[in-house]
Image 1 (spheres, helix red, strand yellow):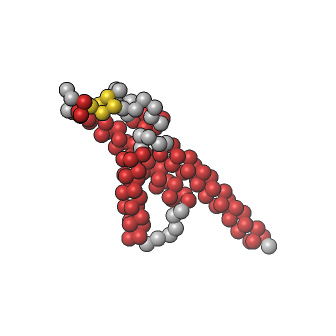
Image 2 (cartoon, rainbow, N blue to C red):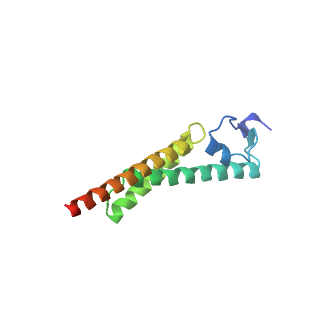
Image 3 (cartoon, rainbow, N blue to C red):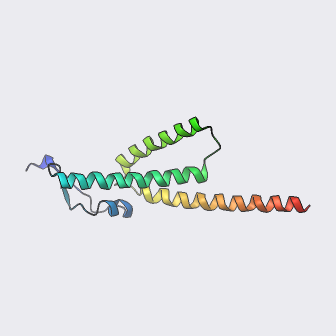
Length: 127
């Protein structure tokens, strides 16, 4: 087996990437179908996780009422962008973890904003 057919798996992956890549050993043999399948499956699950957290962050923080066509374009671009981000940075940087924190912060912000507006509306009705 030549060195060109083997990829080394980093041992310092971030927690989410490590969870999805746990079935891999220290190296992945590109000629071994089961190892390649595990690598692709782990990357795909990491990609889906990044997509879900990116959609939540977008919906909680930035989404405005758009027409269905515009919304479709935004989500298609989101899927394409997260594909490349996961491909390039998914194993090296805490991409999924960062998006998770962003989604939580934006969700809390959205909840507080909703409560504040509701309270303000109730105060206006009383006056």
